[in-house]
Length: 211
Image (cartoon, rainbow, N blue to C red; front, side, top):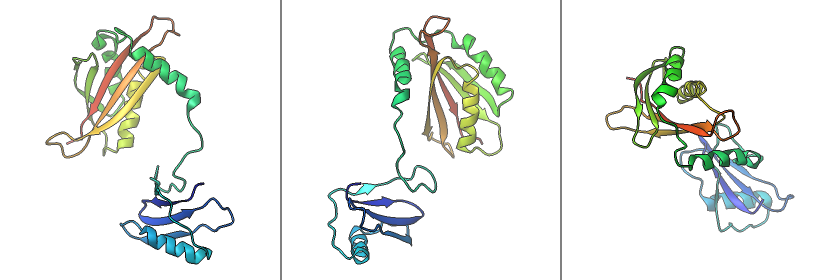
């Protein structure tokens, strides 16, 4: 790995110095603090440990935690093997008239049935000017952890999902709300490899904070 200083923003901050030379020890400095460790201090500590002087690199590498306890800051591979399927859906999304009409007839019955077994109640449902089916749901479960809401929404989407589906979660704060509103942008459709002709649906699922 190229020379550099890596700062990991954990509850206990740690400074790590990496070098190209494998025989040079790596120092980890830990201290309970909510502020970043000074780069010069980290260099000084490392020099005392290694017994040799090292210059600071021109760019500091900021490593963000991907989850609690993450010590790598990076993965093990890319997702190129799955890219073609995503591109196929994107190409279909750009075709004129690909989004089907009357989602209240094709999708709403599935959503209504799903809500009978999921911690949701339908607040409103209607077609937006952009053709998306806007569905506003009321959370009826205990608590409202983001992971639990997401899992329930994915179960809901599974009742009307076609061959290819993309879901994007967003968080917004509406005026007057005491918490974050979760919005799930859903695109699902047939790309030409099914029994029926290519078509799709766009659904915007909104789950405001429970009151």
